Amino acid sequence: MSEGEGKPPVVVVSEETSVTSGTAVQEKLIAAARVFSNLLKPTYGPRGLDKMLYKTNGSTAVTNDGAKIVAELMVKHPAAKMMVAMGNTQEEACGDGVTTTMILCGALLEEANNLLAKGLHPLTLVDGYRTALEVAAEQMDCDAVEVDDERLLGVAETALTGKGAEAAIDVFAPMVRDALTAIEGGVERPGAEHVAMFKLGSGGLRDSHLIRGVAIRRRVLLDTLPNDLVNAPTVVVSGDIKIRKMTRNAEIQITSAEQLDGFVEAETERKRQLARALIESGASLILAGGEIDRDVLHDLADAGILAVPELDESELQNAAAATGATLIDSVLDIDAGDLGVAGTVHWERRQATDQVEDVIRLDDCESPGAVTLAIGGAGETATEEIIRGLHDALRATSLALENGQLLPGGGASHARIAQAVRSASESESGRARLAMDAFARALETVTATLADNAGKDSLDAVLEMRAAARADGAPVGIRADGEIAEVPGVWHPRSVIEEGLESAVETAMSMLRIDQVISARGD
Image (tube, rainbow, N blue to C red; front, top):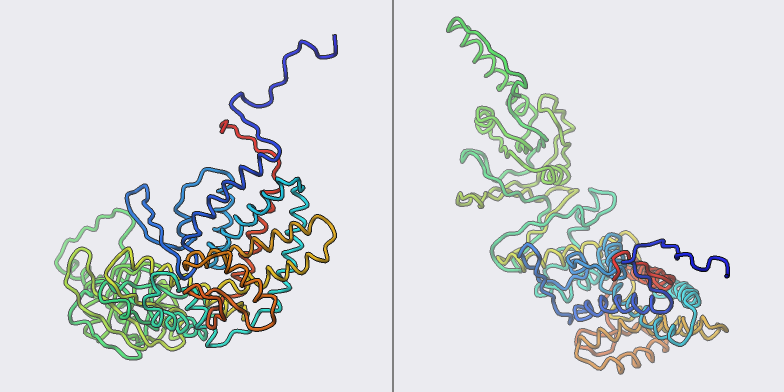
Protein backbone atom coordinates (compact mmCIF):
# COMPACT_ATOMS: atom_id res chain seq x y z
CA MET A 1 0.00 0.00 0.00
CA SER A 2 1.23 3.45 -0.79
CA GLU A 3 1.78 5.91 2.02
CA GLY A 4 -1.44 7.55 3.10
CA GLU A 5 -3.73 5.17 1.14
CA GLY A 6 -7.08 4.62 2.80
CA LYS A 7 -6.86 7.72 4.97
CA PRO A 8 -9.67 10.30 4.71
CA PRO A 9 -8.81 13.57 2.92
CA VAL A 10 -7.92 16.58 5.04
CA VAL A 11 -10.87 18.98 5.16
CA VAL A 12 -9.77 22.62 5.44
CA VAL A 13 -12.99 24.42 4.51
CA SER A 14 -16.67 23.63 4.88
CA GLU A 15 -18.53 21.60 2.28
CA GLU A 16 -20.50 24.67 1.18
CA THR A 17 -17.32 26.48 0.15
CA SER A 18 -16.71 26.76 -3.60
CA VAL A 19 -13.32 27.45 -5.14
CA THR A 20 -12.97 28.95 -8.63
CA SER A 21 -9.51 28.88 -10.19
CA GLY A 22 -7.73 29.62 -13.46
CA THR A 23 -9.04 31.80 -16.28
CA ALA A 24 -12.61 31.30 -15.05
CA VAL A 25 -11.81 33.72 -12.21
CA GLN A 26 -10.93 36.60 -14.50
CA GLU A 27 -13.88 35.82 -16.75
CA LYS A 28 -16.35 36.07 -13.85
CA LEU A 29 -14.80 39.23 -12.44
CA ILE A 30 -14.60 40.89 -15.83
CA ALA A 31 -18.19 39.94 -16.69
CA ALA A 32 -19.44 41.56 -13.46
CA ALA A 33 -17.39 44.71 -14.07
CA ARG A 34 -18.69 44.90 -17.65
CA VAL A 35 -22.29 44.83 -16.40
CA PHE A 36 -21.55 47.67 -14.00
CA SER A 37 -19.82 49.72 -16.71
CA ASN A 38 -22.61 49.16 -19.24
CA LEU A 39 -25.16 50.29 -16.65
CA LEU A 40 -23.62 53.77 -16.61
CA LYS A 41 -22.84 54.18 -20.32
CA PRO A 42 -26.29 55.54 -21.31
CA THR A 43 -25.91 58.35 -18.73
CA TYR A 44 -22.57 59.58 -20.10
CA GLY A 45 -21.91 62.88 -21.81
CA PRO A 46 -24.06 65.88 -22.74
CA ARG A 47 -26.65 63.61 -24.39
CA GLY A 48 -26.78 61.08 -21.56
CA LEU A 49 -30.10 59.95 -20.13
CA ASP A 50 -31.23 59.63 -16.51
CA LYS A 51 -31.82 56.67 -14.23
CA MET A 52 -34.75 56.45 -11.84
CA LEU A 53 -33.72 54.92 -8.53
CA TYR A 54 -36.48 53.42 -6.41
CA LYS A 55 -35.13 52.99 -2.88
CA THR A 56 -36.03 50.42 -0.26
CA ASN A 57 -37.73 53.10 1.86
CA GLY A 58 -40.11 53.92 -1.01
CA SER A 59 -38.51 57.21 -2.05
CA THR A 60 -37.27 57.86 -5.57
CA ALA A 61 -34.44 59.78 -7.19
CA VAL A 62 -33.93 60.70 -10.84
CA THR A 63 -30.30 61.29 -11.78
CA ASN A 64 -27.52 60.64 -14.26
CA ASP A 65 -24.82 61.36 -11.69
CA GLY A 66 -22.53 58.35 -11.54
CA ALA A 67 -21.64 58.88 -7.88
CA LYS A 68 -25.31 58.98 -6.85
CA ILE A 69 -26.13 55.82 -8.83
CA VAL A 70 -23.15 53.95 -7.40
CA ALA A 71 -24.00 55.03 -3.85
CA GLU A 72 -27.60 53.80 -4.13
CA LEU A 73 -26.94 50.38 -5.68
CA MET A 74 -26.92 47.47 -3.23
CA VAL A 75 -24.26 45.33 -4.91
CA LYS A 76 -23.30 41.82 -3.77
CA HIS A 77 -20.72 40.63 -6.31
CA PRO A 78 -17.10 41.13 -5.10
CA ALA A 79 -15.99 42.62 -8.44
CA ALA A 80 -18.91 45.05 -8.36
CA LYS A 81 -17.92 46.04 -4.83
CA MET A 82 -14.42 46.82 -6.09
CA MET A 83 -15.99 49.03 -8.75
CA VAL A 84 -18.12 50.79 -6.13
CA ALA A 85 -15.05 51.41 -3.98
CA MET A 86 -13.26 52.85 -7.01
CA GLY A 87 -16.20 55.18 -7.74
CA ASN A 88 -16.34 56.35 -4.13
CA THR A 89 -12.60 57.08 -4.19
CA GLN A 90 -12.98 59.17 -7.35
CA GLU A 91 -15.93 61.06 -5.86
CA GLU A 92 -14.06 61.82 -2.63
CA ALA A 93 -10.90 62.89 -4.46
CA CYS A 94 -12.41 64.98 -7.26
CA GLY A 95 -16.19 65.13 -6.94
CA ASP A 96 -16.54 64.45 -10.67
CA GLY A 97 -15.54 61.90 -13.30
CA VAL A 98 -17.08 58.83 -11.62
CA THR A 99 -18.92 57.67 -14.76
CA THR A 100 -15.78 58.07 -16.91
CA THR A 101 -13.77 56.05 -14.41
CA MET A 102 -16.34 53.24 -14.37
CA ILE A 103 -16.54 53.09 -18.16
CA LEU A 104 -12.75 53.05 -18.51
CA CYS A 105 -12.29 50.30 -15.93
CA GLY A 106 -14.91 48.14 -17.66
CA ALA A 107 -13.27 48.72 -21.04
CA LEU A 108 -9.79 47.87 -19.72
CA LEU A 109 -11.08 44.61 -18.29
CA GLU A 110 -13.01 43.74 -21.46
CA GLU A 111 -9.89 44.27 -23.59
CA ALA A 112 -7.90 42.21 -21.08
CA ASN A 113 -10.41 39.38 -21.33
CA ASN A 114 -9.86 39.15 -25.10
CA LEU A 115 -6.08 38.85 -24.60
CA LEU A 116 -6.42 36.36 -21.74
CA ALA A 117 -8.49 34.15 -24.05
CA LYS A 118 -5.55 34.18 -26.47
CA GLY A 119 -3.16 32.97 -23.77
CA LEU A 120 -1.55 36.21 -22.61
CA HIS A 121 -0.39 36.04 -18.98
CA PRO A 122 -2.26 38.36 -16.57
CA LEU A 123 0.99 39.87 -15.26
CA THR A 124 2.06 40.70 -18.81
CA LEU A 125 -1.16 42.65 -19.10
CA VAL A 126 -0.43 44.39 -15.80
CA ASP A 127 3.05 45.40 -17.00
CA GLY A 128 1.67 46.73 -20.27
CA TYR A 129 -1.05 48.73 -18.54
CA ARG A 130 1.46 50.21 -16.11
CA THR A 131 3.75 51.30 -18.95
CA ALA A 132 0.81 52.79 -20.82
CA LEU A 133 -0.19 54.78 -17.73
CA GLU A 134 3.26 56.37 -17.67
CA VAL A 135 2.89 57.36 -21.33
CA ALA A 136 -0.55 58.81 -20.52
CA ALA A 137 0.94 61.05 -17.81
CA GLU A 138 3.55 62.37 -20.28
CA GLN A 139 0.85 63.14 -22.85
CA MET A 140 -1.21 65.00 -20.24
CA ASP A 141 1.86 67.11 -19.49
CA CYS A 142 1.93 68.13 -23.16
CA ASP A 143 -1.81 68.84 -23.46
CA ALA A 144 -2.37 70.68 -20.14
CA VAL A 145 -3.09 74.42 -20.31
CA GLU A 146 -3.17 77.06 -17.60
CA VAL A 147 -6.49 78.16 -16.14
CA ASP A 148 -7.88 81.65 -16.75
CA ASP A 149 -11.26 83.28 -16.12
CA GLU A 150 -12.78 82.19 -19.44
CA ARG A 151 -11.57 78.61 -19.11
CA LEU A 152 -12.73 78.51 -15.50
CA LEU A 153 -16.23 79.33 -16.71
CA GLY A 154 -15.81 76.54 -19.27
CA VAL A 155 -15.00 74.06 -16.48
CA ALA A 156 -18.24 74.94 -14.70
CA GLU A 157 -20.25 74.70 -17.94
CA THR A 158 -18.69 71.33 -18.80
CA ALA A 159 -19.50 69.89 -15.36
CA LEU A 160 -23.11 71.10 -15.61
CA THR A 161 -23.70 69.93 -19.19
CA GLY A 162 -25.91 66.87 -19.44
CA LYS A 163 -27.46 67.43 -16.01
CA GLY A 164 -30.71 69.03 -14.90
CA ALA A 165 -28.98 72.37 -14.37
CA GLU A 166 -28.18 72.58 -18.09
CA ALA A 167 -31.59 74.17 -18.71
CA ALA A 168 -30.23 77.37 -17.11
CA ILE A 169 -26.51 76.80 -17.63
CA ASP A 170 -25.98 80.47 -18.53
CA VAL A 171 -27.20 81.31 -15.01
CA PHE A 172 -25.61 78.49 -13.02
CA ALA A 173 -22.11 78.43 -14.56
CA PRO A 174 -21.32 82.08 -13.68
CA MET A 175 -22.87 81.49 -10.24
CA VAL A 176 -20.47 78.60 -9.58
CA ARG A 177 -17.46 80.60 -10.74
CA ASP A 178 -18.49 83.72 -8.84
CA ALA A 179 -19.19 81.73 -5.67
CA LEU A 180 -15.66 80.36 -5.57
CA THR A 181 -13.97 83.61 -6.54
CA ALA A 182 -16.03 85.44 -3.88
CA ILE A 183 -14.56 83.34 -1.06
CA GLU A 184 -10.95 83.46 -2.29
CA GLY A 185 -10.20 86.34 0.06
CA GLY A 186 -11.90 84.69 3.04
CA VAL A 187 -10.46 81.15 2.96
CA GLU A 188 -7.13 79.60 2.11
CA ARG A 189 -8.46 76.99 -0.35
CA PRO A 190 -11.90 77.74 -1.84
CA GLY A 191 -13.98 74.58 -2.17
CA ALA A 192 -17.49 73.21 -2.38
CA GLU A 193 -17.56 72.86 1.42
CA HIS A 194 -17.62 76.67 1.67
CA VAL A 195 -20.74 76.98 -0.52
CA ALA A 196 -24.15 76.22 0.98
CA MET A 197 -27.31 75.41 -0.96
CA PHE A 198 -30.67 77.05 -0.23
CA LYS A 199 -33.94 75.94 -1.87
CA LEU A 200 -36.14 78.92 -2.64
CA GLY A 201 -39.15 76.64 -3.04
CA SER A 202 -40.70 78.96 -5.63
CA GLY A 203 -40.07 80.54 -9.00
CA GLY A 204 -38.03 78.95 -11.77
CA LEU A 205 -34.42 77.99 -12.34
CA ARG A 206 -33.58 81.45 -13.66
CA ASP A 207 -34.62 82.96 -10.34
CA SER A 208 -31.54 81.30 -8.79
CA HIS A 209 -28.87 83.67 -7.55
CA LEU A 210 -25.74 83.96 -5.44
CA ILE A 211 -25.96 85.16 -1.85
CA ARG A 212 -22.65 86.54 -0.57
CA GLY A 213 -23.46 85.21 2.86
CA VAL A 214 -26.08 82.80 4.20
CA ALA A 215 -29.82 82.25 4.09
CA ILE A 216 -31.64 80.76 7.07
CA ARG A 217 -35.18 79.49 7.61
CA ARG A 218 -36.22 80.39 11.15
CA ARG A 219 -39.18 82.06 12.78
CA VAL A 220 -38.55 85.72 13.72
CA LEU A 221 -40.04 85.82 17.20
CA LEU A 222 -41.17 89.46 17.36
CA ASP A 223 -42.60 91.73 14.68
CA THR A 224 -40.88 94.65 16.41
CA LEU A 225 -37.41 93.27 15.69
CA PRO A 226 -35.51 95.47 13.21
CA ASN A 227 -35.25 94.66 9.50
CA ASP A 228 -33.14 95.74 6.52
CA LEU A 229 -29.92 96.27 8.47
CA VAL A 230 -26.82 97.56 6.66
CA ASN A 231 -23.23 96.77 7.71
CA ALA A 232 -24.59 95.12 10.83
CA PRO A 233 -22.03 94.13 13.52
CA THR A 234 -22.76 90.47 14.20
CA VAL A 235 -22.35 88.22 17.23
CA VAL A 236 -22.60 84.44 16.83
CA VAL A 237 -23.25 82.47 20.02
CA SER A 238 -23.08 78.68 20.11
CA GLY A 239 -25.44 78.19 23.09
CA ASP A 240 -28.45 79.68 24.85
CA ILE A 241 -28.90 83.32 25.81
CA LYS A 242 -30.74 82.81 29.05
CA ILE A 243 -30.13 82.05 32.70
CA ARG A 244 -28.87 78.51 33.15
CA LYS A 245 -31.15 76.20 35.09
CA MET A 246 -29.84 74.41 38.15
CA THR A 247 -28.80 70.83 37.54
CA ARG A 248 -29.80 69.77 41.08
CA ASN A 249 -33.14 69.94 42.83
CA ALA A 250 -33.26 72.58 45.54
CA GLU A 251 -35.88 74.24 47.73
CA ILE A 252 -35.72 77.88 48.77
CA GLN A 253 -37.81 78.93 51.77
CA ILE A 254 -39.16 82.47 51.48
CA THR A 255 -40.69 83.97 54.63
CA SER A 256 -41.52 87.51 53.49
CA ALA A 257 -42.62 89.50 50.46
CA GLU A 258 -39.32 91.40 50.55
CA GLN A 259 -37.39 88.13 50.14
CA LEU A 260 -39.57 87.18 47.14
CA ASP A 261 -39.05 90.59 45.58
CA GLY A 262 -35.31 90.27 46.13
CA PHE A 263 -35.24 86.82 44.59
CA VAL A 264 -37.17 88.00 41.51
CA GLU A 265 -35.04 91.14 41.24
CA ALA A 266 -31.82 89.08 41.36
CA GLU A 267 -33.08 86.91 38.55
CA THR A 268 -34.14 89.96 36.54
CA GLU A 269 -30.75 91.58 37.09
CA ARG A 270 -28.98 88.52 35.73
CA LYS A 271 -31.13 88.77 32.60
CA ARG A 272 -30.29 92.47 32.33
CA GLN A 273 -26.60 91.58 32.50
CA LEU A 274 -27.00 89.26 29.51
CA ALA A 275 -28.88 91.88 27.52
CA ARG A 276 -26.48 94.64 28.58
CA ALA A 277 -23.44 92.61 27.49
CA LEU A 278 -24.96 92.16 24.03
CA ILE A 279 -26.09 95.77 23.69
CA GLU A 280 -22.75 97.18 24.86
CA SER A 281 -20.90 94.97 22.40
CA GLY A 282 -22.25 97.19 19.61
CA ALA A 283 -23.90 94.29 17.79
CA SER A 284 -26.93 94.83 15.56
CA LEU A 285 -27.44 91.13 14.79
CA ILE A 286 -27.36 88.22 17.26
CA LEU A 287 -27.36 84.63 16.01
CA ALA A 288 -27.70 81.94 18.68
CA GLY A 289 -27.55 78.17 18.65
CA GLY A 290 -29.99 77.86 21.57
CA GLU A 291 -32.97 79.63 23.09
CA ILE A 292 -33.16 83.35 23.85
CA ASP A 293 -34.97 84.40 27.01
CA ARG A 294 -38.11 86.41 26.21
CA ASP A 295 -37.15 89.25 28.58
CA VAL A 296 -33.68 89.45 27.00
CA LEU A 297 -35.28 89.36 23.55
CA HIS A 298 -37.53 92.32 24.38
CA ASP A 299 -34.55 94.30 25.69
CA LEU A 300 -32.67 93.58 22.48
CA ALA A 301 -35.68 94.62 20.37
CA ASP A 302 -35.93 97.90 22.32
CA ALA A 303 -32.26 98.50 21.54
CA GLY A 304 -32.82 97.87 17.80
CA ILE A 305 -31.01 94.52 17.71
CA LEU A 306 -32.22 91.60 15.60
CA ALA A 307 -31.86 88.26 17.44
CA VAL A 308 -32.38 84.85 15.79
CA PRO A 309 -32.36 81.75 18.05
CA GLU A 310 -32.05 77.96 17.63
CA LEU A 311 -29.72 77.77 14.63
CA ASP A 312 -28.04 74.43 14.00
CA GLU A 313 -24.27 73.98 14.07
CA SER A 314 -23.72 74.21 10.32
CA GLU A 315 -25.76 77.42 10.09
CA LEU A 316 -23.77 78.97 12.92
CA GLN A 317 -20.46 78.02 11.33
CA ASN A 318 -21.52 79.32 7.91
CA ALA A 319 -22.79 82.57 9.40
CA ALA A 320 -19.56 83.06 11.35
CA ALA A 321 -17.49 82.32 8.25
CA ALA A 322 -19.55 84.66 6.07
CA THR A 323 -19.46 87.62 8.48
CA GLY A 324 -15.98 87.03 9.89
CA ALA A 325 -17.35 86.61 13.42
CA THR A 326 -15.90 84.31 16.08
CA LEU A 327 -18.18 81.57 17.40
CA ILE A 328 -18.37 82.26 21.16
CA ASP A 329 -19.76 80.26 24.08
CA SER A 330 -20.67 82.98 26.60
CA VAL A 331 -22.14 86.41 25.88
CA LEU A 332 -20.56 87.79 29.06
CA ASP A 333 -17.08 87.48 27.56
CA ILE A 334 -17.68 89.22 24.21
CA ASP A 335 -14.60 90.96 22.85
CA ALA A 336 -14.57 93.53 20.06
CA GLY A 337 -12.59 91.12 17.92
CA ASP A 338 -15.34 88.51 18.16
CA LEU A 339 -17.77 90.57 16.08
CA GLY A 340 -18.23 90.15 12.35
CA VAL A 341 -20.05 92.33 9.85
CA ALA A 342 -23.06 91.39 7.70
CA GLY A 343 -23.30 93.66 4.65
CA THR A 344 -27.10 93.55 4.51
CA VAL A 345 -29.65 91.70 6.64
CA HIS A 346 -33.24 91.23 5.51
CA TRP A 347 -35.93 88.95 6.85
CA GLU A 348 -39.17 88.09 5.11
CA ARG A 349 -42.24 87.09 7.06
CA ARG A 350 -43.96 83.93 5.82
CA GLN A 351 -47.32 82.51 6.82
CA ALA A 352 -46.86 80.54 10.03
CA THR A 353 -47.33 76.77 9.64
CA ASP A 354 -45.58 73.72 11.01
CA GLN A 355 -43.27 73.56 7.96
CA VAL A 356 -43.05 77.17 6.75
CA GLU A 357 -40.68 79.57 8.49
CA ASP A 358 -39.43 83.06 7.84
CA VAL A 359 -36.43 83.56 5.55
CA ILE A 360 -33.49 85.52 6.94
CA ARG A 361 -30.74 86.58 4.51
CA LEU A 362 -27.27 87.81 5.34
CA ASP A 363 -25.89 89.16 2.06
CA ASP A 364 -23.19 91.42 0.60
CA CYS A 365 -20.61 90.33 3.17
CA GLU A 366 -17.12 91.61 2.51
CA SER A 367 -14.54 88.82 1.93
CA PRO A 368 -16.96 86.09 3.06
CA GLY A 369 -15.65 82.69 4.10
CA ALA A 370 -18.95 81.09 3.08
CA VAL A 371 -21.53 81.91 0.43
CA THR A 372 -24.87 80.40 -0.61
CA LEU A 373 -26.42 79.38 -3.91
CA ALA A 374 -30.18 80.08 -3.77
CA ILE A 375 -31.86 77.59 -6.13
CA GLY A 376 -35.23 78.40 -7.66
CA GLY A 377 -37.88 75.86 -8.56
CA ALA A 378 -40.70 74.17 -6.67
CA GLY A 379 -40.07 70.49 -7.57
CA GLU A 380 -38.26 68.64 -4.78
CA THR A 381 -36.84 65.81 -6.94
CA ALA A 382 -35.74 68.13 -9.74
CA THR A 383 -34.17 70.60 -7.30
CA GLU A 384 -32.19 67.82 -5.60
CA GLU A 385 -30.76 66.77 -8.97
CA ILE A 386 -29.81 70.36 -9.78
CA ILE A 387 -28.06 70.68 -6.42
CA ARG A 388 -26.09 67.48 -7.13
CA GLY A 389 -25.01 68.91 -10.48
CA LEU A 390 -24.00 72.21 -8.89
CA HIS A 391 -22.01 70.38 -6.24
CA ASP A 392 -20.09 68.49 -8.94
CA ALA A 393 -19.45 71.75 -10.78
CA LEU A 394 -18.20 73.40 -7.58
CA ARG A 395 -15.81 70.50 -6.92
CA ALA A 396 -14.48 70.55 -10.48
CA THR A 397 -14.10 74.33 -10.58
CA SER A 398 -12.36 74.44 -7.18
CA LEU A 399 -9.91 71.77 -8.39
CA ALA A 400 -9.19 73.88 -11.45
CA LEU A 401 -8.47 76.88 -9.23
CA GLU A 402 -6.30 74.84 -6.90
CA ASN A 403 -4.23 72.94 -9.47
CA GLY A 404 -4.22 75.53 -12.24
CA GLN A 405 -4.12 72.99 -15.10
CA LEU A 406 -6.88 71.98 -17.49
CA LEU A 407 -7.31 69.35 -20.20
CA PRO A 408 -9.68 69.52 -23.20
CA GLY A 409 -12.92 67.59 -22.88
CA GLY A 410 -15.30 65.96 -25.31
CA GLY A 411 -13.10 62.85 -25.46
CA ALA A 412 -10.23 64.89 -26.94
CA SER A 413 -7.78 64.16 -24.10
CA HIS A 414 -8.53 60.43 -24.07
CA ALA A 415 -8.14 60.23 -27.86
CA ARG A 416 -4.76 61.97 -27.74
CA ILE A 417 -3.59 59.74 -24.88
CA ALA A 418 -4.73 56.67 -26.84
CA GLN A 419 -2.69 57.81 -29.85
CA ALA A 420 0.38 58.46 -27.67
CA VAL A 421 0.14 54.99 -26.09
CA ARG A 422 -0.33 53.36 -29.50
CA SER A 423 2.77 55.16 -30.83
CA ALA A 424 4.80 54.20 -27.74
CA SER A 425 3.81 50.54 -28.12
CA GLU A 426 5.62 50.35 -31.46
CA SER A 427 8.94 50.54 -29.64
CA GLU A 428 7.92 47.72 -27.26
CA SER A 429 9.34 44.40 -28.41
CA GLY A 430 7.61 42.02 -25.99
CA ARG A 431 4.05 40.89 -25.46
CA ALA A 432 3.39 43.93 -23.29
CA ARG A 433 2.87 45.74 -26.60
CA LEU A 434 -0.44 43.89 -26.93
CA ALA A 435 -1.51 45.17 -23.55
CA MET A 436 -0.56 48.75 -24.51
CA ASP A 437 -2.63 48.51 -27.69
CA ALA A 438 -5.51 47.17 -25.59
CA PHE A 439 -5.10 50.15 -23.25
CA ALA A 440 -5.39 52.52 -26.22
CA ARG A 441 -8.53 50.80 -27.48
CA ALA A 442 -10.07 50.98 -24.01
CA LEU A 443 -9.54 54.75 -23.90
CA GLU A 444 -11.40 55.06 -27.18
CA THR A 445 -14.48 53.74 -25.39
CA VAL A 446 -14.97 57.30 -24.16
CA THR A 447 -15.20 58.51 -27.77
CA ALA A 448 -17.47 55.62 -28.77
CA THR A 449 -19.84 56.19 -25.84
CA LEU A 450 -20.14 59.92 -26.49
CA ALA A 451 -20.91 59.24 -30.15
CA ASP A 452 -23.44 56.50 -29.31
CA ASN A 453 -25.34 58.72 -26.89
CA ALA A 454 -25.39 61.52 -29.47
CA GLY A 455 -26.94 59.17 -32.04
CA LYS A 456 -23.83 58.84 -34.22
CA ASP A 457 -21.96 55.78 -35.45
CA SER A 458 -19.34 54.93 -32.82
CA LEU A 459 -16.92 53.17 -35.20
CA ASP A 460 -16.82 56.13 -37.58
CA ALA A 461 -16.28 58.47 -34.63
CA VAL A 462 -13.38 56.40 -33.27
CA LEU A 463 -11.65 56.22 -36.66
CA GLU A 464 -12.12 59.94 -37.27
CA MET A 465 -10.78 60.78 -33.81
CA ARG A 466 -7.74 58.58 -34.42
CA ALA A 467 -6.95 60.47 -37.59
CA ALA A 468 -7.41 63.82 -35.83
CA ALA A 469 -5.18 62.76 -32.92
CA ARG A 470 -2.36 61.84 -35.32
CA ALA A 471 -2.44 65.28 -36.92
CA ASP A 472 -0.89 68.28 -35.24
CA GLY A 473 -3.36 70.98 -34.33
CA ALA A 474 -6.00 71.97 -31.83
CA PRO A 475 -7.61 69.12 -29.83
CA VAL A 476 -10.68 67.65 -31.52
CA GLY A 477 -13.54 66.01 -29.65
CA ILE A 478 -17.19 64.95 -29.84
CA ARG A 479 -19.61 67.83 -29.68
CA ALA A 480 -23.06 67.60 -28.10
CA ASP A 481 -24.59 67.03 -31.56
CA GLY A 482 -22.17 64.16 -32.26
CA GLU A 483 -20.04 66.07 -34.76
CA ILE A 484 -16.26 65.75 -34.52
CA ALA A 485 -14.63 69.16 -34.36
CA GLU A 486 -12.80 71.50 -32.03
CA VAL A 487 -14.53 71.79 -28.67
CA PRO A 488 -13.81 75.31 -27.40
CA GLY A 489 -15.00 75.99 -23.88
CA VAL A 490 -15.08 72.29 -22.89
CA TRP A 491 -12.51 71.80 -20.15
CA HIS A 492 -11.82 69.39 -17.31
CA PRO A 493 -9.39 69.88 -14.41
CA ARG A 494 -6.36 67.73 -15.10
CA SER A 495 -6.72 66.00 -11.74
CA VAL A 496 -10.21 64.73 -12.65
CA ILE A 497 -8.97 62.95 -15.78
CA GLU A 498 -5.68 61.86 -14.24
CA GLU A 499 -7.16 60.53 -10.98
CA GLY A 500 -9.94 58.76 -12.88
CA LEU A 501 -7.52 57.06 -15.27
CA GLU A 502 -5.20 55.99 -12.45
CA SER A 503 -8.11 54.61 -10.39
CA ALA A 504 -9.48 52.68 -13.38
CA VAL A 505 -6.09 51.17 -14.23
CA GLU A 506 -5.24 50.27 -10.63
CA THR A 507 -8.63 48.58 -10.12
CA ALA A 508 -8.31 46.67 -13.40
CA MET A 509 -4.81 45.50 -12.51
CA SER A 510 -5.99 44.39 -9.06
CA MET A 511 -8.67 42.22 -10.64
CA LEU A 512 -6.25 40.75 -13.19
CA ARG A 513 -3.90 39.64 -10.41
CA ILE A 514 -6.62 37.51 -8.78
CA ASP A 515 -6.20 33.83 -9.72
CA GLN A 516 -8.62 32.19 -7.30
CA VAL A 517 -11.95 33.05 -5.68
CA ILE A 518 -12.93 31.19 -2.50
CA SER A 519 -16.57 31.63 -1.55
CA ALA A 520 -17.71 30.41 1.86
CA ARG A 521 -21.34 30.78 0.72
CA GLY A 522 -20.87 28.39 -2.17
CA ASP A 523 -21.91 30.85 -4.90
